Amino acid sequence: MKEKAIEDLLAKLVCICGLGERIVDVESVTGGFMHRMYKVITDHGVYAVKHLNAEIMKRPDAHENYARAEKIERILENSDISIVPAMVIGGNKMQKVDGQFFYVFRWQEGKIADWHHISNEMCYQAGNVLGRVHALEPKNMDDLKTEASHIDWRGYVLKAKEENSAIASLLEDNEGLLVYAESELNKARASLPAVLCISNEDMDPKNIMWEGGIPWMIDLECLDYGNPISHVMQLALQWSGIVTCEMDVDKMIAFFDGYLEAYDNCFRGYSDVVGVAYTWVEWLEYNIQRALGKCMDETERELGISEVRTTMDRIKYIHKTVPQIREALKTLLYK
Image 1 (cartoon, rainbow, N blue to C red):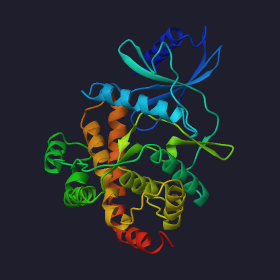
Image 2 (tube, rainbow, N blue to C red):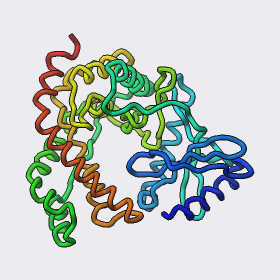
Image 3 (cartoon, helix red, strand yellow):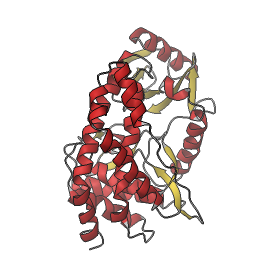
């Protein structure tokens, strides 16, 4: 979306929501890889405004998913967990302006951790926060069906080659690895215990704001009910360096130590479900689709291409590192 168009939309949003008489300044800030975030300063205050991705909002289940996340966010607001919730304006958290959707937040001071400079203590604290979230409403289920991943890698290779896409050779060269990674993911998911809880699968370092040593959870639209074993495994790996291909098993164990202090459901088979680390294949598929034109604009398409390359490197790294991760979980956890 062009700069003038978004500024006009934000001006309407500010007026409709009663956030001030006029906008003093608008600044684009980091807002993750799916949505766009702006710092909006008015004569009444400072706000963070999230502009939700139009392509995502077209999905049939999008509004239902966001409504569920909002209900869970209200549960967290009533806990002692530090979060930055969306403002309720006119009875609603989600705001609509000219067919576009937004969330408005009060501006939270603090800093996002540099992915390359995350300490063991930060991993411990983040794990503890996740554990406290999981401890709110855990439920042992008689049966919990896990969705298997079914991605048509051959179809994506052919489509990328047909369109002479920049990602065509990358997908073709790594098709075998992607089939294997998806298979390992599905095996791990099938081995998960039947436990369900409130969770924030998106609680990676870019979604924690640190202020005075306190971790504040931000970007909560992915709140849902999910499997705690899968989520703690994935997030422990993200906080300990999988994302940057700089794995540090001590940080992974620190994350688990903080988590288990807050919530321990007695599961002891983490080394058997390391395959959930390959969840990245689903993020890869989303970005393949963006790279092949399912996106808002050229900027997002280029982001999709970039993320395909980065995510492929990450999957290769996970494949190389899985034995080390599994061994650390067997020998260092619960010592």
